[in-house]
Length: 132
Image 1 (cartoon, rainbow, N blue to C red):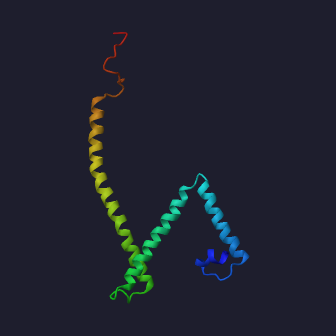
Image 2 (image 1 turned 45 degrees about the horizontal axis):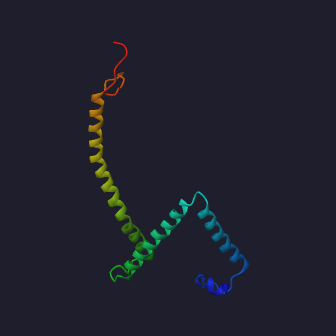
Image 3 (image 1 turned 120 degrees about the vertical axis):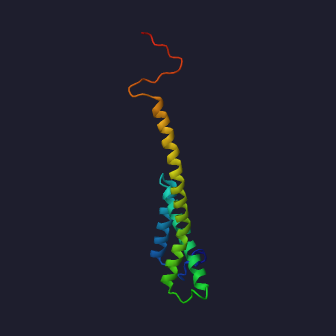
C-alpha cells in the first residue's frame, strides 16, 4: 500500500527514516495550515508555481533549435529574465500612475489647506458661539 502511495517519489522501498521525514513534513504543513500563520503557505505555493513557470520557460527555450546550444544555466537565466518582464511592466505602470495620482493628491491637499487657517477651530456650519 505504501509503495503505491509513495510511488511518485521513486524510492522502491521506504525506510523508516524516509517515512519519518515525509510524515514530519506533512505534519508541519498541516500544523501551519491550522495555525494563524497559514498565509505563509501562500508564499510556499506561490514560489513553487513561480519556479514551475521558470521550468516551463526553460524547457521551451531548450527545445528551440537556435537556443539549444546554450548551456542549461544560460537557459535558466534567460527564462528567469523573461519571467521578470511582467513584474517590470507592472512596476513601471504603478510608478507612472503614482506620479499622476500624487499630483492630484497634492492639489487636493493644497485646496484643503487654503480653506483652513492655522490655529482656527473647525466648526460646523450651524455652530453658534455662546460668547461674542
